[in-house]
Length: 188
Ligand code: GRF
Image 1 (tube, helix red, strand yellow):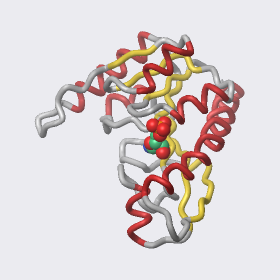
Image 2 (spheres, rainbow, N blue to C red):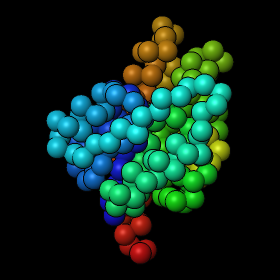
Image 3 (cartoon, helix red, strand yellow):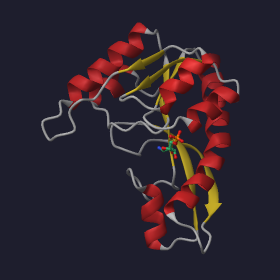
């Protein structure tokens, strides 16, 4: 099974996946960002499918098709999203049906969306965490594979809480990806 990581940020979650000895066949980003530097440093093929349009006319379906083309050209079977900044449309989820994983920095179904950490803080919850799930067309939904709780401290701000959640994601996500890939190999 050939795994690709989709990311848009620093790539610290992607780095944890690589460091856990998960074989990453390709890294795909939608912009120039740290994860591309990481892939280059680790000798992993990397691709930028650049998103140039952030306006209301953005052709999300075409962008999703472009992502699929890039992944298919790299012969990818399974996709792990790790902070990918563009919501993808049906062509992507149709092409990789049931084979897209995501990690989200909150305990889904609570606090979906891009600001899961901020929203949890605003609600004043005392426990939040992270969720690894199979990603489906609806953002931050789909079957939950694993969750871990993280305590919210009195002096937390968004950055400190997110960093503690990410410390947990860096263990939970690679372990869950490994199990998912092993189960898939066993059943194909
Ligand atoms: C993680 O918290 C992930 O759950 C979220 O984006 C973050 C990515 O972190 N979707 P990094 O850019 O890999 O450090």
